[in-house]
Length: 254
Image 1 (cartoon, one colour):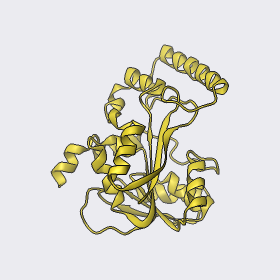
Image 2 (cartoon, helix red, strand yellow):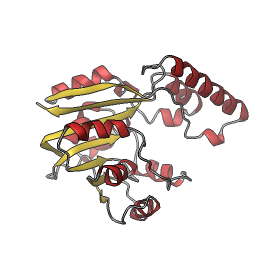
Image 3 (cartoon, rainbow, N blue to C red):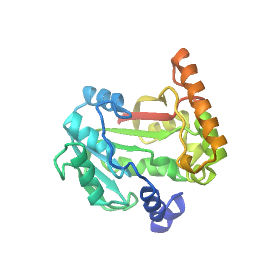
Image 4 (tube, rainbow, N blue to C red):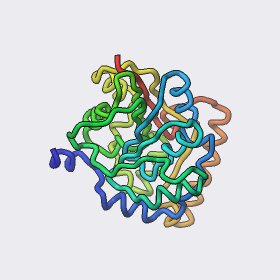
C-alpha cells in the first residue's frame, strides 16, 4: 500500500516542506468571511455537526475558522505538521493554544479511523493521480450521518492558463482531470453519496505562487487580467468554469 500511495501522489513531504518554508505570510488573520465561509455555514446550519477533521490542511486555517467562528471541535491531519506554527496561528487569531487537535499521519494508512461528523479537504485531492481512491480515503473518517466536503482549485479556466504559462512546475503538481464537477459527482454517487451541491465557486481570481519572482511584464499582465476579470464578473454575476477559481462538492451517505 505504501508503494501505491507514493505512485498515486504528485507531491512528496519535501515538496510541502519547501512550500511552507517559502511562505512569508503564514501567520495572518482568519476572518469571519474567510474562503468558503458560506459553504461551512450552510452545511452546519442544515446538519448536526459536532466535530470535524481537515485532511491535508496544514497549517489548519479552515480548522481554525470552524473553531473560532462556529464553535466546532476541529482536528487536522497532515503528513507534514509543524506544531509550533499551528500554535502561533492560534495565538495570532486570539484562539486558545491547542484548540486545534493535530495528527501527523498518512491518509493512506489502513489502520482503524476515528469518525467525524464533517470530513473535508481544501486543495488536496488534485495532488493525486487516482481521484476516486483519494476521495474514498476521506470516507474512512466519516460517521454514519456525516458530511463529506471537498474543495479544489479550478485550473481549467483563466487561472489555469496563468498557472500553466508562468508556473509550469506548480501546475504539473496538480491532476487537472480531477477538476471536473461531473467526474466528482459520479465519484460521490459511486461511493454511495447523495450529492447536495457540486459546482464552480467564486466570481474571479487568479494567482501565481511564484508571482514575486516574475518579471515586470508578467506582473503587469497579471494585474491587467485581474482587473479585467473583476470588472467582467461584476457585470456577469455568476460562477463558471472560465472565471471561477474553485470547485466545491459536498454530500451525505445514502
